[in-house]
Length: 370
Image (cartoon, rainbow, N blue to C red; front, side, top):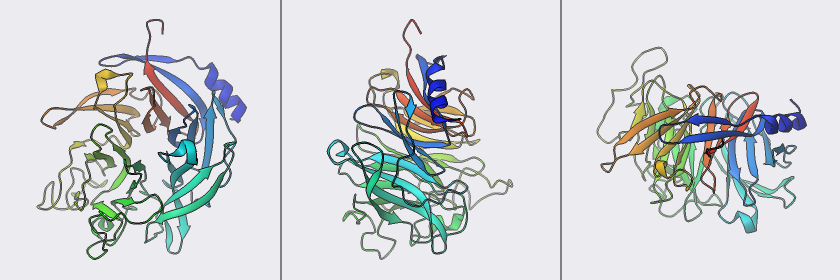
């Protein structure tokens, strides 16, 4: 589908109203004709930056999709890899700085990298593109690269990395695979990292024992970090990664191998953390957000998790005792595989659909006339 046709198609699609547990929502297609859109970031003026996994970054504004933004580095788009997350620097309005993750080729195969770049004022190209991180060991597989970015209040980056479908790497503390890493905005190592001296583990590692965390987000209320992670057959997890801790994969898990065989030693082992919540069967979580917007006060503090496998949004609440409960599943199969979810400044949800003919959706509160 051509870009002009796609934009016209998006503009002509009537919004869909969906009654959820607490509120009726309106789902609008902001843009369609995107090829496996992986991530969306909201620009200060209300435009959207969208990444497409095959290796393109585009601007979406007023329902129109730009040509690919120039200046991206060579990207190895294969299997689950390609151009992945994008996040704006907290000072983007002045600096035009952004960050993105991608799978790239190098000695030994492929791996996940983090880049820093500047978006031109005319929004057509990236300049000063610098790779600030590359996982130290590359491999030939095409699966489980991660990878999303969460920016802390101090401007440092937490980045999720998959185990590259080589499960034992997630327990090797001198291997970046299967970890959450923590780096400064220039790629240097924060002094408060748990292994900053590099003796017991690589200095960038924050936590280990993760399988394929494709969701990572901070709770704006208290600054706590959360991840949503793919299990195998069952055992998708929500975790709250803390410095130096081990989240168990593949020694402990609530899932099984795709063959049905057991993995590891069971569901618990001393020295390894339990998930805050797990799904069985798997939903294949694409991203996670902690809702702190104005539009849906009913959801305040809830986790919003997109799902690829069942093409839905899972909404989960936390009790005063910290227990997490899945409250509802929204949009079950209605819009396709759901990848990214972001809370927009006005409190609406922005969701990308991971399809050949993918879309950027906006979920807002329906008015009586909708």
